Length: 280
Image 1: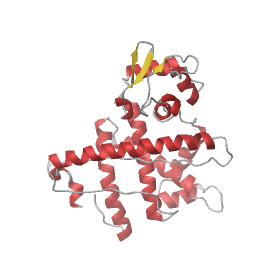
Image 2: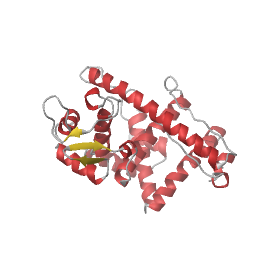
Image 3: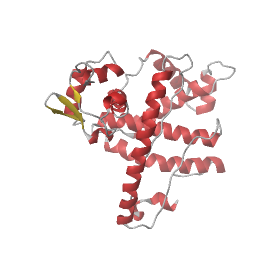
Image 4: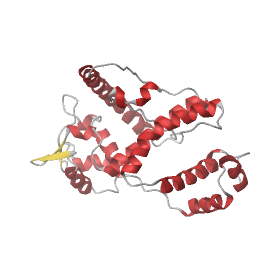
């Protein structure tokens, strides 16, 4: 990507954007999303962000102001803003519902065995014994537990053992359904980038954004580090999840319960000759 015409700050940013976009462009090409489609998407996003984030005196920016900020033609700005006003609210992915159900199953005392692991649940609870129906209803009463169970069986998130539902270990790893993986791609990477942007623009106090990087390692050494990262990362997320569930149940009906958070753990490895960003 040519960096002619950029000042030093913009050139550094363009270099970073070039780097972070390459995996995304690879995915878009692989899934048949062409440049004209992507260009139109970027045009819409430029207008949307300018509209939401660059108001003056708490007033919505005019089409002319958005033109100055983005360089997008006024007729396109008008079309996009009208289009955004008529669009319906996006449907929440089932991935978020499944994630919350699994989070409760793996952290709430009534759903854990004597080793602190998710216990097997009766399909329908009896007496004081917690059941799968009770678990699902504790998260969302508008969804039938049977529908969740059938979908989870299809995705191999759970298995049946007599009259019990058993959570598979694979449930703690994002399943291979493309729609669900795309959901997590958008939400997880959005928050990671938003944290970095907050720190660069110094909009608020610095947010946690750290990584460990080493090169010139053997594959054996990398695999040893991967095993450590998987174990320690899972321990951290499980511990935080248990604390978050307790706080959520205590906070959810409070008037000032208006904040959200996300902590993520990721791992990446590649051979140096294929991992060009290590030289940049």
